[in-house]
Length: 127
Image (cartoon, rainbow, N blue to C red):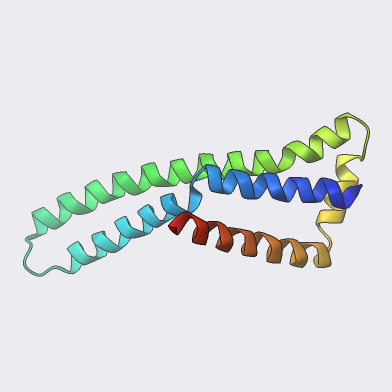
């Protein structure tokens, strides 16, 4: 039963990760950082123009950070739902499920599964 609960938790994590568009939003933050670095290194711009661009980028990056933080928390909450539900209906105590999830072999296997699922999801999204 523990493996099923953990599997559901991982599936919820993957689904939330995809539905909440964490990767595209992180890419936006990275692009903003790169563009800002390019502006700071642009010798054709005066200091006032650079300062204005950096301030605008800083505000954008703060918004991106908060957006990613909220979406990351929601992703973790989605993963917690099956664990908590199983505990509430008496299938398996949450502490036992979490102890299982913290085993090194389970972490490695789960990491591989999540990585493969995200890669497949990204490839499907590109088509």
